[in-house]
Amino acid sequence: MGLSLASGGHLTHGYKISFSGFLYKSVSYDVDENGLLDYDVIKELAIREKPKVIICGYSAYSRIINWAKFREIADACGAYLMADIAHISGLIIAGVHPSPVPYADIITTTTHKTLRGVRGAIIMTNNDELAKKIDRWVFPGYQGGPLFHAIAGKAVAFGEALLPSFKEYGKCVVENSKEFAQAFLDKGVSIVSGGTDNHLFTINVYKSYGISGKDAEMLLGKFNITVNKNTVPFDTLSPMVASGIRLGSAAMTSRKFSKWNQLAQIIDTILRSHKTILENKTLTYNLKKQVKVLTKEFPIITVYR
Image (tube, rainbow, N blue to C red; front, side):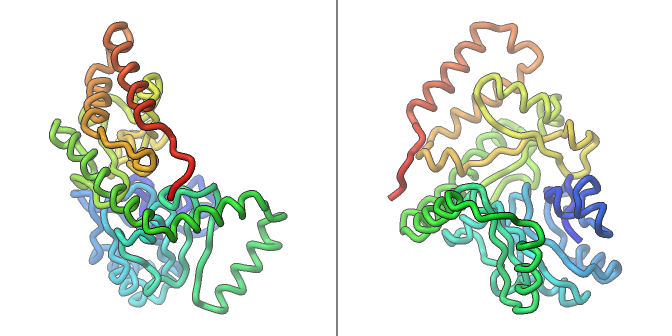
């Protein structure tokens, strides 16, 4: 049982085109009309459906997750609790998001995203029986030979995560995300759940600008601004088109980026004039130039101390 794709869950949390959706019987829960998790409603669903595993932790949910509530829900229906912290593991390490360690039976994470390492993954459990089964299925079940360059990259990332500066990075990621989101809210833009408590947020561009997430992603890409289309709760468009775009602060925070209001203004200008902007050569040139100046002002940092 996992959060639906439209509400911010991941494909692998039971969506029909994922292995988790067609190899297993999947049940989804949703956010409420305010874009928030309703733990009482989720508990009622869990007791009724009796899932073997409940997944919490998401790919597009911008609020703090109450792990203790999910532990209570899992216990009420006899389910294992799996926390997918792929997006927020770096924030947890930095101490700006609560940890699921006291509550979850299994914790999974990637080693990139807010952890800021190479692409990879970790599976953690303090249950010896589950650990044996997981180890057996990782190898020889799924995994081939080890990638030593990836192992080295993870070691570097873990070393950086132990530094005091990583806590400051995590704090800044959240502060910057809130500032970035507020800049859009001040312009009357619709943001799922009305804001953010973590590193990301989702804008309903279809409602705010009359453009689909897919078209917004492609248009912003022409200005060298990278976002991705994303569904919004109760989306009327298909996931391949989507009504939203997802924005985050982690990568630019790593570059010490500070001009969030200016960036929001650039994105807002592009999306508000999406029907004609590419025909306006002067405006297009000026906006591209602003983006280029910003990227030069805040270059990629290769060593964190």
